Every structure is written in C-alpha cells, then in structure tokens.
Length: 78
Image (tube, rainbow, N blue to C red):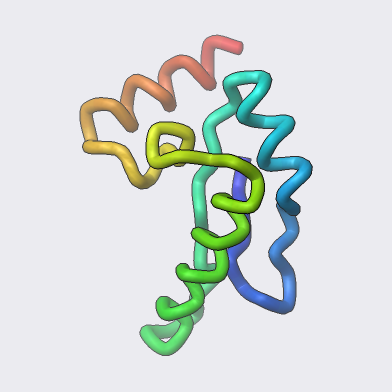
C-alpha cells in the first residue's frame, strides 16, 4: 500500500498504517513529487508512518534492495 507523503493528501492515515502492519502488509512511502522541490515532503510521510507504529522493516522502500524484492514477491503471492 502507498502512504502518499504530500501534506495535502497523507491518504494512508496512522490507523490504516497500524492496521496494515498488523496484517503484514508492506507500505511504500511516496512523495507524489512532480519535481525536485517535492522530495522534501518525504518527512511528512515518515512522521505519518511513525504515528501508525511502522518501523523501517514495515516500509518496503526503506529496505535494502534484496529485501524489497522479497517483499514485492510476497505481495504478489497474496
């Protein structure tokens, strides 16, 4: 699932993040950036993920590439 870090969206709230974690669903934090300026919005997504109790291991795009590929494979098998 995607947590959109743009402050005007943040469309995966902290409760949904916590529910995803309980079910073992990996989260990807996206800035929804349409240019370099938008990349600084990532911090809002990280704060939202932390409010939901997510750790680095719960965020697919915070993992090393090898682990991220494994997460993607698990997600496709569901």
